Length: 152
Image 1 (cartoon, one colour):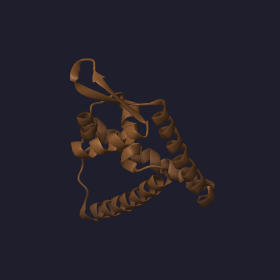
Image 2: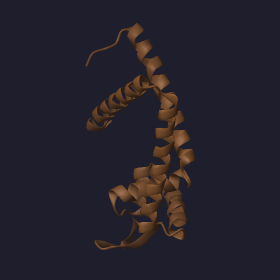
Image 3: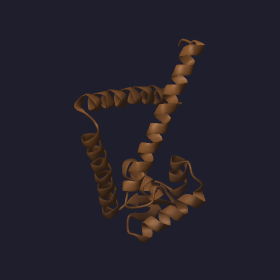
């Protein structure tokens, strides 16, 4: 690891702020494309990828309170997007899982969000800018790969 000089550090901080602001704006815009509250979409996403989970496990994954995840799971259950069943290894626990209807909602949500982003890129950027955006995405993934590998 090397240290940045004061001038380089100030530049890196400015770049980091621009990236943080841009990512925040994109995330907020993509959330508006969703047909349901972001907390519900996120819970479905975790259950779809991670498989059945307890409410407490999902709350930890989501970094929210058990009370908040209980409200979310109740709403998803009422809509038929998740099911609950006793944990076969510990009958005192309840495992939540995504129903076929929940998987369809996640897939539709993904398509809506992708459609907006593809349209925005196509309408707003030149071919050269699109290539630069792809390079920027790769660089962000490189940063995240290193961060996740180090457990940070």
